Length: 488
Image (cartoon, rainbow, N blue to C red):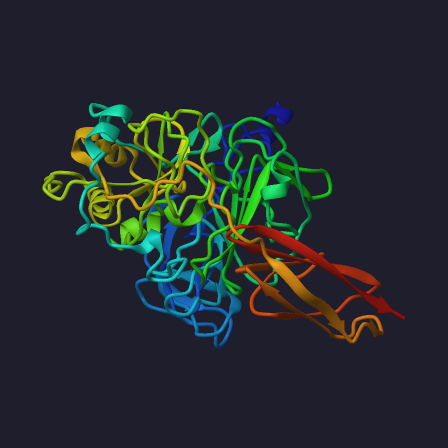
């Protein structure tokens, strides 16, 4: 019986191993949301605390590291004006010894009117190309083209507009054409061209990792596979079509173009680009930040099923064998009629439709009828964008077109009179000035570096003996010339 009595559990002092006993419950976990965040200098972010998953718990807030910003009693953190990495801390009001932290990374904010960095980054009101660029032109007061009714009927007067972009994914890929904004320090990678190498601008290109790739698999071969990158510090736009990521980080592409965002200079007549019409893609994308701020101030990119074997500036290329005058030429601008009432449309659609009245759409590729291009963003409201289908071809009109080119314009090709390196023999890493003179050219590129160039000179610092190639492009073609720098 003594063995039995030895196992009896007392009601107050529980012996180890006694049946029916329990250990004291662990304290509920205190947590801060979000647990980690990146914010811009001078901006704010709201934090909250929860206890055991229950929000609304009373806490005292603080910033752990000195001179790393401030946080209010309500948990609103204000970042300092200089970059820093720090932590905000919540202490339980009923037991200050119980704390939780969140990591904060403060990064530089772009100056007003300067794009942020990253995938789908806000442009902060910045527009590519000068104010008088066709992309930025207000066409609301221009007359309709005499062929407008025939062209609209050809494409489809009863077909509705469609936003070819949105939130979420389709076939495993973001919906739309993505882009990235990078700094001048972004490493360049090699690009090898396939189908349209003789109409492409040379790499290397500052493509980041992960890339802003249109599609589910950058190493795949299906779809248009566009890649678009804006170098915000140098104001150049890099675009690829039919791109494919290679082992080691280089790329192959069917065609590619580099655009000087400070210039209206076109690429040579008859040349394609990363878009069928020879146009840049980036300026024609609907971007969430522009729509959300009611600041969409440019024309949008448009596709239709069948185009004409013709183009009108700013397009430089056709992609059709159809010669019907009722088929729209590449580069045609189509706008929403001024009298169309858009007041009943939801917010995102309404901003887009107002832009279609003011700036219109520029026909850039063969595709589905009245499809508008944009960049993917999780903040798009797909139901809102779907309302664009309430606008049909009958609500649209073609803006009066300039010269419709059914043959490629011809003229004098560029001539490079001189291209030289000074000095031509240097120590490794020393500065060398490459300079040139040319006629009939509006765009210049230097390979293997630094790539696109403005003016008539550029500075390089070769590490080994290098032969540099100057490519000069003009309205009627291109020319090349080389210069060698010997490194001792």
